Length: 115
Image 1 (cartoon, one colour):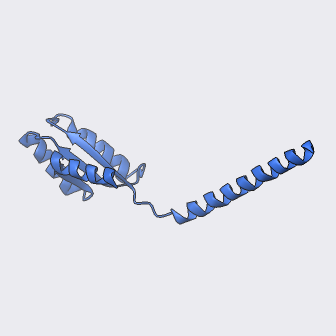
Image 2: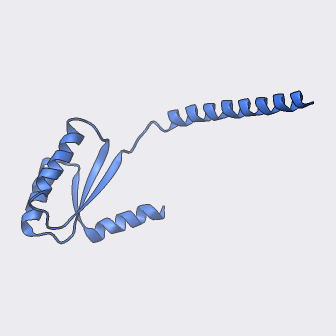
Image 3: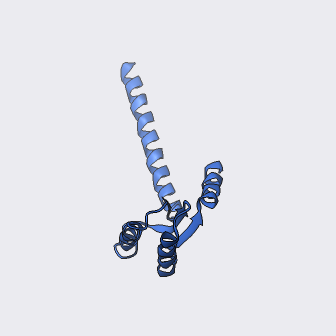
């Protein structure tokens, strides 16, 4: 009797494992289309370091292909004029860089968190 219970339990676990493997394989084929990663960077008065940091990040994205980023959103928190000039220059160099005010960025994040 105990042998029958142990065999039944092992067969149940084996079938469950087989079903999970099949489900994992099917889901991996169904989800092959990736929308990429969206990165949001908040800055405020960082004109000394922002260009170096962003260019380093963009180099890794564009040339090394380390990340699959579709958009980089830079949330400007009332930066100075020189910082805004640097951001506009980066936006011209890289078409996937977007500059927004913090309020606009917060609305996007709130919309994503509500879905």
